[in-house]
Length: 294
Length: 227
Image (cartoon, rainbow over all chains, first blue to last red):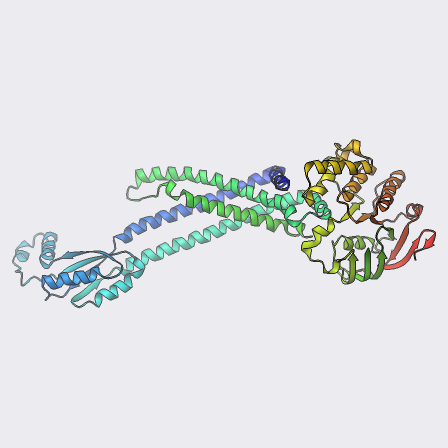
């Protein structure tokens, strides 16, 4: 217990021994974490808005001309039974013709004279689906149904949205790795200074028989403290920035939807603490290097 | 018992510091290791502290062969060896009491009251019980070396290694420190003192081992050869 307490005390002293360098480390760590956090929040919100768009995605299925209502409704049932289909909307030939009449004003004379038998508009079923990734398979299944004349899938939109989402995820991962490396570099140098200023003590400890963990513990804790302080400060700064952004979006960009900060704050705190503790602890171990070798 | 069996130490740059050294030091013996600069004295100390590893041969300290001891066991081994350096190597920001107590705390498993009792006992042995709350900077060189000695013996080591313990002291203080080290022999400790002060060593009528270019060139008790 005493040893643990000693390590904590030494870790705190270490932070103040090289106060300016510690301050700079925490500042750089906060900056990197705020960048990572901002990007994470931007990513999840873009994803959120893109998901809204993809939810509107649908496939239009046109049926053969010679079908009657009963056959068309039977095909609708077959479609609804397919995987990935969330719901369907049926448009009869008459309703289709009505839509054309509404759209093409000024052609009433021609359109009004089309009889039921002459109606060239096919039955149409709008198919709404859940998973964009499975849209190819759904398209194949729809075309295989007897009585289906054509299928109008919006692969291009789905593919574009998916590649955009993947691209954002990729950039986020690279950005996080880059910031982690920067944080690690700064913390390594801070702890190196701390180790250097205590090198004589470390040598004495080694001769007395102090174990590797006994010598390393205060420095690892010092790195962890820097990390935790950086993570907590970054979290609150991020909260302020996000609140300001939400206010701006609400006023100027009504169409854009944003998650409430509270919804994403556990994720953000986990990312911050994860990066900060990882860089703090691993950075300290790297800095100690040969100093703790027996 | 300490035993060097055909020990050779070659440093990475090629320099041979110890060349096929054979030397046996019995338990409770007091030995001066003497020699010129570069003779291999410091290397011997480093090997005994397992700061360096031997290149070939065997080095036994008690029942431990240092050549084969894994790094993970070195800290535990060092707790059984007391070491004293020329430059004292005390924690400047700790008091005399804290410096000595630190060696106990590193080992762990000792209560606060026991730490206090044992530290004060050791300070009494080296004659510094009234300086427990002083900092190293407030002490003379001789007193600082006595603190280092108290720290070296507080864990009741079987062997004490002193590397030029009087190098920074005047003749009177050197006599004091050397007397204390000889006193350790009376407590049953094996004491190895590396020194270049021939006249001082001769005053104590103990075994003197001489090295030159990493080889053993003399082994005698001042006034008669070792058996």
